[in-house]
Image (cartoon, rainbow, N blue to C red; front, side):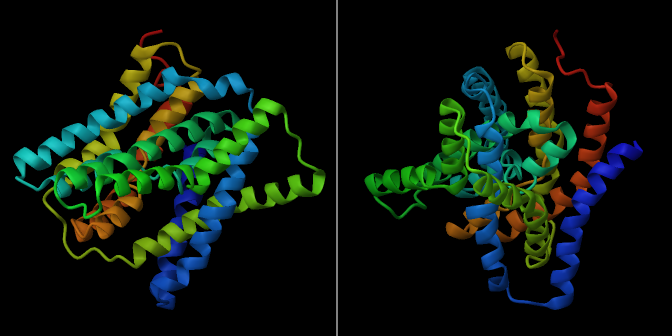
Length: 320
């Protein structure tokens, strides 16, 4: 267990340092802007490109893995969406944000760094596939359901155009596509370019986790919403369990791929859920509370999960 603590605590320690620094320095939220730009547009894309470009191209087209991952994620989304709609009598827009709170994990800021530390570079491809395809579906689901609920003010054609542009032009997805090309054509960048990519990739996890801590500090918890009672267990417990079951039932995947997908499923709610709530002016404060609470609890839950996987107590395939 000490090995797991040595892996997880420094990782979450970076989030804590960002949180404490933001509380002490009292800088405005705008001060975080350039760091976020560096993370989203430069550092994390460099990490994705570096890892994917070195991967055999046949591993990048495992659509059975992609479909299984999305099925597990959206099983939980559908359950929580229905709970919000029918049990809490929430609107479609509110239920959508609740569903995303349970299904949309922090697979961008936390996922790559933690998975690579835990499982090595073999985790790079499943991380990239989970990130790209889950994000694409989230980017489509949110505006589509908002439009269906009458909270989307754009026309269907403009909505479709904006969603497609958001997917195609997302820097992570562009970097992943470039990595696919690099892997297919065996592109080997010149040494100075490769060193630059390496430097940028090394900065990705520390900067992203520090920025996440600052973001949490800038959104203080004002009250604990009732919905937390079912969203938190769905995100941190139910989703990784369903991911594990679905991948075990779907076929024989590389153990590292299964462990990576389960770890990604167990991560706390993504900060993008708050951004979506803010964009549509719905469930903002409660989305912020969900992110903070799941992040705090995940220190323990992710540590336990990693211990079970690394110790062999949790078999890579439930039905070998």
